Amino acid sequence: MTETTGNRPPLTVWIISDGKPGHVNQSLGLAEALARATTTETHRLPALPAWRAWLALLLKHAPGKSLPSPDLIVGAGHATHLTLLAARRARGGRAIVLMKPSLPRTWFDLCIVPQHDGIAADTLTLVTEGALNRIHAAANRDVHHGLLLIGGLSPHFEWDDDAIQLQIKSILARTPDTHWTLTTSRRTPPEFLAELPPSPNLTVVPHTATPPDWLPTQFAQCGIVWVTPDSASMVFEALSAGADVGVFDLPVNPKSRVGQTIARLADSQRITRFVRWCASGKLHPNLHPLAEADRCAEWILEWLKKKN
Image (cartoon, rainbow, N blue to C red):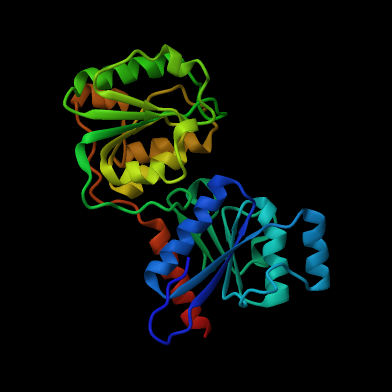
C-alpha cells in the first residue's frame, strides 16, 4: 500500500501484526486514513513471539532490516506490544498502540483507545468511539438494500436464537420493499441458519462464504444495517459507513462495558433498539457518520508537526 505525491518523502508506517483479523483491521484502518491525509508507504510485519521480542528489545534488534526506517510503528493487540518497542529501539520512529496496552502507556509515544476501555484522554492519549476500522462513509447507499449482521455467544449478552429469529421475521415482514442480506459470524450457533425460514426478500450468506472484502462492499451499498448487540465492532463499522443502524434486543450482562456502550449509543440516538423501532417503525437517521480513523490520522499528523 503505497502512495507518492511529487518529491515529498513518504511517511513510512510499519504495522506490527498479530494476525488476528480484528486487530489487523484496526491498524489498517489507521494506515489507510493516514494515506488519505498525506503521502505514505506502509509495510506489515509479523509480531515476534514474546521471548524473541524481549531478546530483540534487549539486543536492539528488530525485523524489517530491508525496509526503510519507520516514522510510525502501529500495533493492536497485546502480542504486538514488545515487538513495537523493539522495532522503535532498533530503527527509530514513534510507537503508536491501539487499544489499552498491557504494558505502561508511558512506554509508547501515543495511545489510541476506544471509550469502553475506560481510559481518560490526555496529550498522548486519544479516546475514540469504538475500535478503529477500515470503513468510511459511502455516497450512494441504497435505502432499499439492508444488511443483517448476526453475532452469537459472548460474555456481554445472553444469546437467544428464538428471540433473534422472531426479530428478523418481524423486520422482513414489515419491510417487503427492502432486500436484505444476512450473514453470520464465527460465534453464531451452527443451528441458527437451519432454523431460519426462507423469505422472498432475504439472501443468506454464511460467514464461511464471504471473501475478505465482502463486508466493506456491503457496507458501501446498504442504507440500513441491523446488528446483534454483541457485535459492537460491527455497530461502529455500520455507523462509519453512514447507514442507519438498528440493534437487536438481547438480555444484557449489567457489568458488561460493551453493553454499556450499546446503551450509550441508543441514548444518544446514534442507533435504534428493536423495541423502539417496533413502536415507531423508523430508525434514527445517521446524520453524522463516524470517521474515527480519519480523526486519529489528523491528530497524529498534528502531533508530528509539533515534534519536528
